[in-house]
Length: 113
Length: 111
Image 1: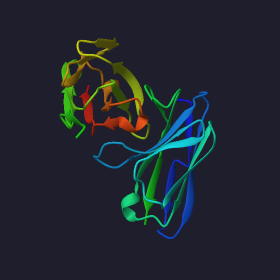
Image 2: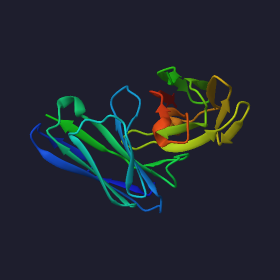
Image 3: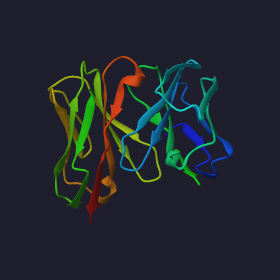
Image 4: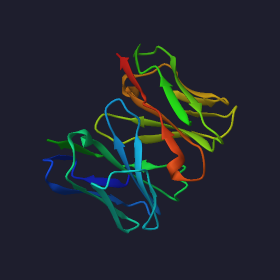
């Protein structure tokens, strides 16, 4: 148990659906992150939040919409996704946004049909 | 352009057969180099951070080393439970957006 919990673990959605991924951390960290992990590709950083404020958006398409209501919770809202968005979405947290050590959740395996 | 390359892509060893994984990097202003382990169906788990050339860190059968161009993860007398994907990442600045991950090495240890 890493202290970072992601739900759901698996998600199948059509291209016209709207769904949300949830992440909760119980570590008292101030920074939270969304990553995308595709087969045989490096982890891609999507968003960074520090004290609930978004500090980084790495050119992510607008069909991905993050929300961070407090330092412990992070959401990723999904709408009108494409099949190439199918991947493992990982949430991580760290004490500070300088991110020296990140603690990852188990991820949500997303399939877009 | 900042870049991280891990080799080999996959490695199969017999139990007890020692070997090394490589992480080569090209980055301006290295702030730190990280090794993570990822098991199937799980997120990456932090192993080590290295900050400067010549630094070494050990944990059980694993030892990480760092030069100005690459890092090695040495595995001594591995056991089947060491089977996992090992990820290398470098941080090129104080911002989290400057973290770059390699594609990983998938390690399998046969009993």
